Length: 142
Image 1: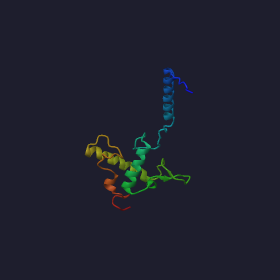
Image 2: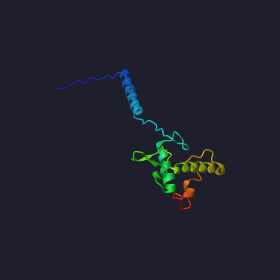
Image 3: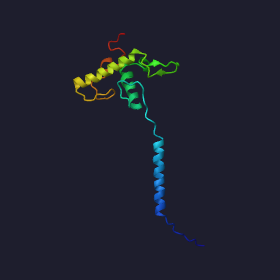
Image 4: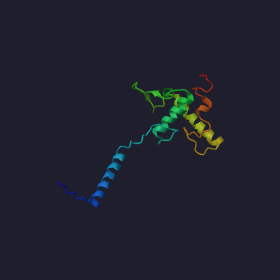
C-alpha cells in the first residue's frame, strides 16, 4: 500500500512571529541574569565604579604581592568577629595606603608624564613593588 505525502506549507508570518518571540525570550533572559553592579563604600582614591575584578586584582597583585601582606594588614576585623570590615578606617595602615597610592600616581604623572595613571595599570612606572619589593616596610624595619 502506498502512502501519499502531503507537502506542509510553512506560513511566513508564523515563522517570523516565532523567530521574534524566541529573540525576545533570549534577550530578556540575558538581561535578567546580568548581575547588578557592585557599589563599594569608602573608596577615596580608587574609582567609585571600579569592577570587582579590577579591585581584586589591585588588592591581590599590587598590595598583597607588592607588600607581602594579606587583607588584614590594612582592613580591620568586623565587629561581629566574622571576617573583615572593608569599609572601616579603624586601622591607620589603610590611610597610609591611600597616601602611598596618591604618591605613586603623582610620581607617575609628574616624572613619567603619564596623563591618567591609575593604580593597577601595568603602564605605571612606579608602583608599590618599586620600593616595597614584597615587604610591608620598604627598609625591612618596623
